[in-house]
Image 1 (cartoon, rainbow, N blue to C red):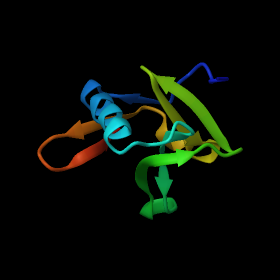
Image 2: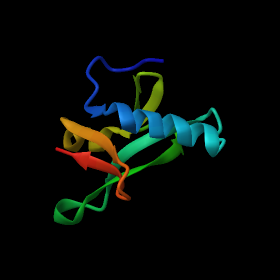
Image 3: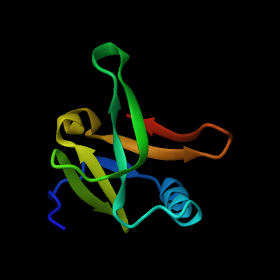
Length: 96
């Protein structure tokens, strides 16, 4: 893996546990990675999370065993963002 030195986001321990659980329970293929990015543009953009294949425009990172991909164009919007998981029904959340 050729991962850049600085990882733009952090993932809380509970979110890491939920991601690893989803990988196992849902049987996500090994050539899929956790994708974090943005959907939409400008003022109407929202964060996105899911499992996807790596594409040429993606940067690959590893956080505590979780393979993470981020579109290079989304990187500057994700710096300092924390991915968390709330068990109260909200699921995955993004904190800035």
